[in-house]
Amino acid sequence: MYGSIARITSSFIDVPGSISIAIYFAGCSIRCPGCQNKHLWDRDQGLSMSIETVEALIYEHPLAEAVVFLGGEPTDQLDFLSSLCCKITDKKKVLYTGREFEWLPSHLTDQLDMIVCGPYKQELHVNGWPASSNQRVLLKDQGSWITQVT
Ligand code: SF4
Image (cartoon, rainbow, N blue to C red; front, side):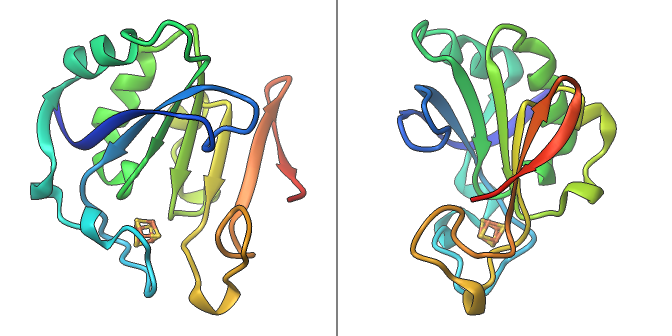
């Protein structure tokens, strides 16, 4: 199975307190006004990569404790995202999505440890994290999701 990936890089900011590998998915169908990542809206801007290739690139960074999926919109490539998650069994898995948590299928959320969700809203912009006040940060705690107060 192949996905369209814009870039893969190490990150110190996307998962608080963890070194992570950030997988930037190419393409976003949500298209929030004021989006800072418009250059990632077009799926054709990405490189077609197999799950095995992405997995190998993730494990080139043995010190990374987490993998973060962002973009672009990772859930626009839901089958690829879910299958990739299945391959990563020894790292924390974090999803940034413009969709609401309630939209996400359980076969995906079951595999994740943290989700930052909701569309970016210009009128609710904050100079902090997440970027607009409607966005929620959800953490899995003993199998249940709890909303983190940011
Ligand atoms: S979901 Fe994310 S990438 Fe897509 S338009 Fe909104 S802010 Fe931009």
